Amino acid sequence: MKSNLDLVNDTDGFPYGNGPITIEGQGLFTLLWRDADGEYPIGYVLDRVVEVFTQLPASLTGNLRVDRAARTLLMFQDLATEPARTAAVAALTQHLREQNIFPLLCGWRNEPWPVHGRRGELLFSVERAAVGLFGTVRYGVHLTAYVEDASAPHGVRIWVPRRAANKSTFPGMLDNTVAGGLMTGEDPFECMVREADEEASLPEAVVRAGTTPAGTITYIYITDGPNNGEAGFVYPEVEWAYDLKLPADVVPQPKDGEVDEFYLCDVDTIRRDLAAGEYKTNCGVVMLDFFIRHGILTAEEEPQLAGIERRMHRELPFPGPHWSNWHSA
Image (cartoon, rainbow, N blue to C red):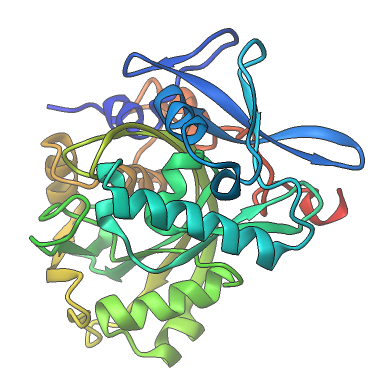
């Protein structure tokens, strides 16, 4: 049975501390970006990915420059505009997909995801399935929809979906009511509204009127392979959390095939399923965050609560809209 700390460890699996880091026996290179003020990190790239990159022509890798002593690399620096860089990244990732080099790319979604610079600018976009090759920050939204019920433990029941059995990632596992990835140019709240319709058939008016922003959850996830295509890739992630108190007569319904079924669960059932490892990893952490914010999980019950909260709000080393001073940098 998994403890609350185990659930966090499953999601925030990247080592803490300084010095060389090894993931699944692989070392890491830091992907740098250079601007007028110098170089700064934007991603983590596995050794084996760097080795593949070095075997490709410069026309595909954006004049790749690798410093093996410093364990850093730069790519696409010579392209002056974001559209040109995005096109070059697309050509590289499409080539890797066609060559079937990385199983990670079997989950191709045709969704552009953003890579941000430290001044708030968009550096380039990359296909969702290929983000792990560059180890850049991924962004998503998670909505927890609940119903007040005085007869239930802690006075609430939460709508919990089971992911479709044919999903490319975490098939058949339990999830948050609504969750999805943030595409380039998309506002987090608008992404959540879109996903609430697509995944759960929730009326837009109800979602817009009743949803409450609940901050962000940040961590660095390491892929495990069976649930996400290929093990050992580094995913720094930012998830915007939202709460939605639903009236009893509004019932989520599957719409786009992402979900097989919704269940209205009490807190004790959710705790049992979390401990049994039934939840998609980051969804378990989002649920813990909901429990903490609503006074369901307290320090009296969980002695390690302070450490758990720190791990759920990890400082990420790369820039993006999770930085408090992002637009003023």
